[in-house]
Image 1 (cartoon, one colour):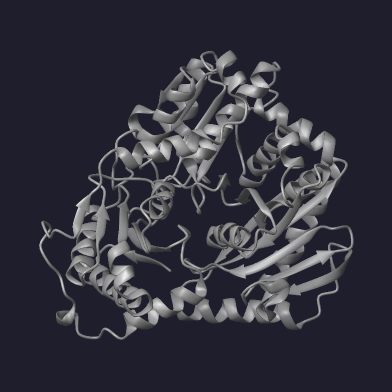
Image 2 (cartoon, rainbow, N blue to C red; image 1 turned 120 degrees about the vertical axis):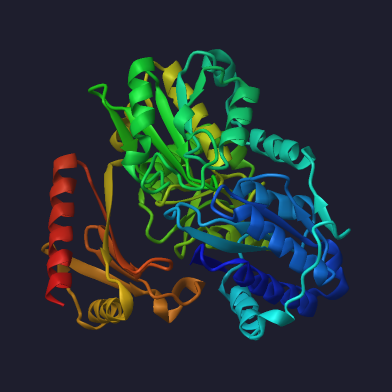
Length: 512
């Protein structure tokens, strides 16, 4: 359950959402749920702290134990905290990487993962029952059911992240030499990431001063999104002066990570989520070969719109790869399923939109563990006299060249919603049989609930040469998204193919 709202939707909206959640907890879990309680975290956005306190006061007024932090904390730490404290649920006040005028409300369940559609639906039903705002209970901040957490949880979270280190020997060897620039983009990543990097032995880390402090206006960037190259402008200037090896940036709630590296011409280039994900898969699996042998069905989990390079790498190490719907909550849900069934072992999960999780300490994408392992991976290549960019070229050499692209079409308002429906309808019904002169081998319609996945308005065309195109409406923005994936032996061949595919789809959309 995730609401992204303009901040003018004031504290009453937050109270209403919280009262609905409280009623759901009481109906579903009774006294036990009230005693286990709810933990709340918030980021650096406008009114995040105020909304956190409003949520806590409504929960406490309903007789539910509530834990809050004394200042902003990351989303992955909230996910960790739910299980660490044994809570029934968690809340994060954040709008992730959206523009500054937005704020949002994410709900987590007992397993530490974001609530999936079935629970979200039931909570929303409870919220919709509340028509009169004056019936929503609230209390004082000093209610004895509200407990402010101390630094013990911070330490426990960082310790859990440090357990994911694979090659401490490499960090010991070159951790003081490799030059890292980090930007939290005015968000929650500053303290946890600097702490963890320092504690494990990365001693040459510089922070982008202009983006270090929490700032609800995100005044140095248009969008606080590490997927946008522009957020790294200041960091790249710093990197040029210092000849830094790598730049790492996290979004405001520190669940997404962007990476900038030097290419073969010494230029700083941004790696995309598919590239970083594939590098991590290769790094983790190649360094855990013996450990993996002893695991029951070791598995990586990715989303249906994420590159197939990760699954190609996994196959080479006899590791299974499974796909979930878009949204990291579905990857988190898999961890819970694996633990219940004991039929598989979760190694890592990732998605093309810059979210990664190695380990099971959190049940959502974790920018802290990702920043740590990306730094470790950069150190590993640095020790071999290579850049991370050269590491990526090595991966392509070994497994083939893979390239992906995302095209979004923005269609606002009621007319826009209608057009998005029409476009989805066209691709669903019109029997597109070739794309870029390549035959369509298979059309997967996820609205039919295939592969035991929840029904979802997503189409995926698999072409005869294993290229693919996925189409889906965005869940949080007035957009329809087209994802393209190609692979081949040569970069030129793949680039051409991708260009033809995108051109044809854009032409089809224009004609509709």
